[in-house]
Amino acid sequence: MTTAFITHTDCLKHVTPDGHPEQVARLQAVLKRFEAPEFDALDRHEAPLAEKSHILRVHPEAYYDKVEAAEPATGWTQLDADTHMSNGSFRAGLLAAGANIEAVDLVASGQADNAFCAIRPPGHHAETSTSMGFCLFGSVVVGAKHALEEYGYDRVAIVDFDVHHGNGTQDLVWNDDRIFFASTHQMPLYPGSGAAHETGASGNVMNIPLQANADGAALQAAFNNSILPALDHFKPDMIFISAGFDAHYADPLANLNFTEDDFVWATHALAKAAKRLCGGRLVSTLEGGYDLEALAASTAAHVKILMEYSA
Ligand SMILES: [Zn+2]
View 1 (cartoon, protein in one colour):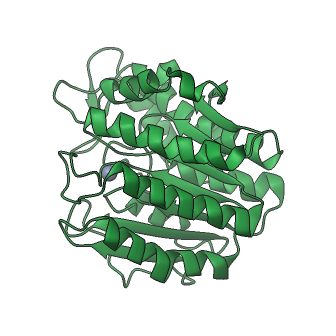
View 2 (view 1 turned 120 degrees about the horizontal axis):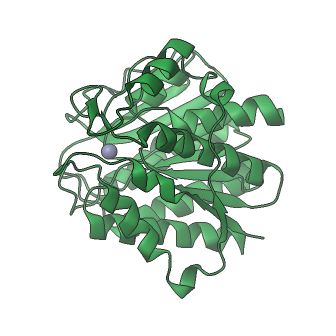
């Protein structure tokens, strides 16, 4: 079978001000990398727009309406210290969430073994009623709730190896014992949350903060000692990855020292867990990653492993 690759060129129409790290060029660099012949076997899909009802599973209508109304005709609206909207940003946000809907549909129906969503804006900092950290909607949680509501799954898991804590995902799943959320991240670092004692209403959240300059050994320890055993215990019916690549040593926004090989290792570990626990069902979504070369190379390395598991 296949690895699905879901994207939309209108995710490039979400434009941030000059010098902003979450820039159009990020997704351009990723999409350019996936033009290589080694990715010919991908099953490519254009992301659909998430329906309003999909978003309202995780955000209140007042927040959805606020984001929609904030979009400017020209120039920028600044929603918070870090998050800007241009004309086209609202649509890009719906496409990012819609990519996750499509990925879940393809994988849950057996049309694809696993899927990668190459989208922006990212989503894991968006809280219930608050944009944050370049994020408008909690796209991965939109996908997770879709899997639970539409496919009769009892439990799903989200693993986030972006260098920043997935505070938004944590906020959105805190009271939902059907969703297990695990995050590795540098601490202290933006957004400041993600201490080990933040464990969710039912112990469904696991935070593993890493010290500055930690390398792949720390990632492997976090996975082997904590995250992988927790996944085995939780027995998810589908695994989601919030795949940020800003823990790469070249990234300008943080200070972890992961390499492409470390992302490969983590992808193997999660794909193996998916094979072991849930028929290989795995949906991965791009979050951060701000060094364009490292981002493109790490994303490519990540997806190549997904393709190995769908061969
Ligand atoms: Zn990040």
